[in-house]
Image (tube, one colour):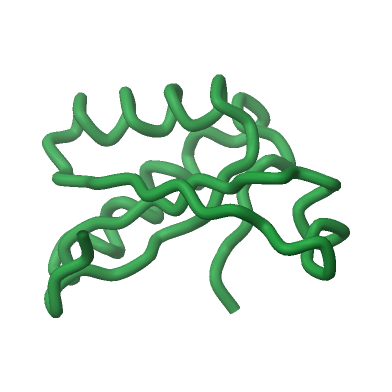
Length: 85
């Protein structure tokens, strides 16, 4: 459940990529949470046809650090990350 001080970092459709992100965040000591959301038929094109998407959430004060860590994974996570608009 999202608190008022939590912010969405990114969305991921691949479970293996999600696990790499979670491991990197844990290693850096960044608190996180995940929520799985069903993707409506109309939005599946945006998520490469995925039926579900994992929303990665962290504390507002750690958001920039989390984004840096995830961006630093580079090719390891490929094009499976969807950043919020």
